[in-house]
Image (cartoon, rainbow, N blue to C red; front, side, top):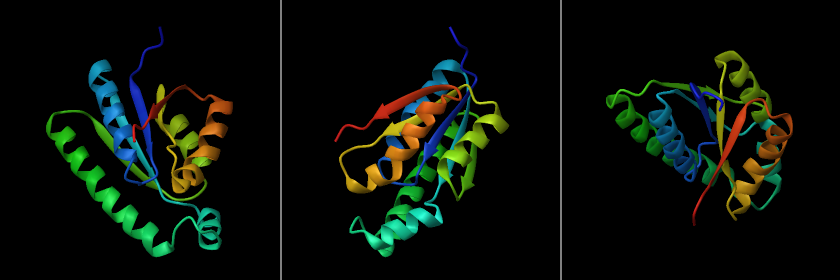
Length: 148
């Protein structure tokens, strides 16, 4: 069985990303692994697509990111107090490229991604990325399904 020493969880800084983060935290505790949290904002091309679609307005998106980031920060503060090694990275740009770069740079053993739920924003932010990463299989990938 493959050892899991370094776990990367990807946050697109949305409300439901906290479920993936909690799952990755549980894995990190179970395997005494280091946890890396990669926050990725939408790249400029995604923002252009969002602006031209009816998914949501830029103002709604900005508010959602601020609220979600605040919640994620609270979860991570609690985990650090408990002694888990957590490294946060904040990137903008092409999500697949940023994730692949982090996997290589940090020598990641396990990638935790969230499975998109039924909202249009989640499909927009996650589907293409998950498909591409699953095709490339840079390491063990676990998809966390979010229960609505």
